[in-house]
Amino acid sequence: MDLSKLKQALQILPDGAKETMVARVFVTELMVLLGFDATETVPEFSTGNGSDAVDFAFRKNTDDEFIKTQSNPYLLLEAKGKDVNLSENSAQYKKTVSQLKRYLLGSNCQSAQWGIITNSENIQVFRKHGRVIHPATKLLEITIDNIDEIILEIKKKIDNPHEALTVAVYNNKGGVGKTTTTVNLAATLASLGKRILIIDFDPNQQDLTNSLGISPNENTLYSWLVNKNEPRPDKLISTRKFRINSRFAIKPGNVSQFDIIASDNKLLSFGEDKLLQLIDNRRLSQALESFRNQYDYIFIDSPPNWRFFSKSAVYASDVVLIPAEHDNISSLRNAVTVVKNFIPEINKLRKDGSPVALPIFFNGGSITPSQKLSAQRAIDEIISKSKKDKINPMDLEPYFYPKFTRSRKDKSIFEIPSYAHIASAAFSHKPAVCSNRKALNHYEALAKEYFLQ
Image (tube, rainbow, N blue to C red; front, side):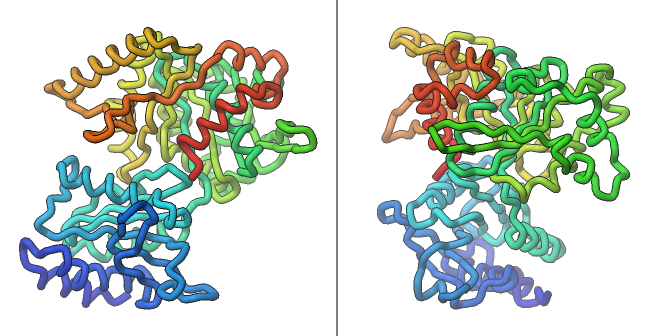
């Protein structure tokens, strides 16, 4: 790969170069190295969202030339000038990321799987899976010395994307319906034709395993995780003995299924120190690697408390789905702890920008107007305190009020009501969405709100 022209572009771009110059001198050379020629590039591509147009859209030619059809883009790129500060957490960086996400969700961009922002001094890659957009790299500083490594990393990612989105369902507070959410969301997505794997990664409770009427395995999950030297660790769990198939019908004659990795009794016998001696927190992520092209979604039912199993689940995930309860301030505060402390802890270990938290949602009983107002006041206070936090300030508004903008002061929070009725389905050892139309409507709404475009 000859990077001489790209390196030359970096050297000749003056300080304060405007967007048009960065696009003409730097971006054109960058995209050639990423494998796109002039017929596979459309500048000022209309996203289908009003007058929004992204600077560049790209797609490899198949039976047609992208520049002629200008349909089904694969990658979007938003360029900025060197006069725009794209350093992490700057106002201009946040605005650019928000702009890219809006473009990726445009009606003409449903096929897009990748997004890039760059001003020739910094670059970051984002992956899109349905409605979910998350970092595929951290924000990278570009230099003459590291541009080779950056190009190779980006090209490897966009040429070989994983099919699965891996989701940890987690709140540091117990009793907020993590297992109920995992099982019913999995069943709902499976009924819509998605390939689903769910993992019971809470050996202490084993709620997911028990709720589906499955007998916990003795040591298969343990063997899978500790066998680090096995050349093909996926072989240990590739048979039906380890990966259980659950078949169910949500509508008459419409049989769906998802796969389950059940809990493990042997893991119960080890304390935290012993587990960490045997199994690294990164091991689950490594072991799941062979599954990421077999499924559309992998859901990990994670235990409360920030210990080995929850840390491993969050480390293995692209995003974290956080259920909370509107009338339980502890569940809200624990959700904040996940967003402000635990996820950043894993970000530092992974060094690729992931995972990220999806907006917090209410997973409890039906909310009256007065209860909703009380919850909103509590959340507003949490947001205000977090902004003023001298040690770890953070704007939590996007995690509680994702639809709130200066022009649209929408403080709505997604909610799944009638929690007790949904949870009672565990007695029948099948997802509530299989027998309760109201439950199915709620979880279809959850799937569309968070995951499906």
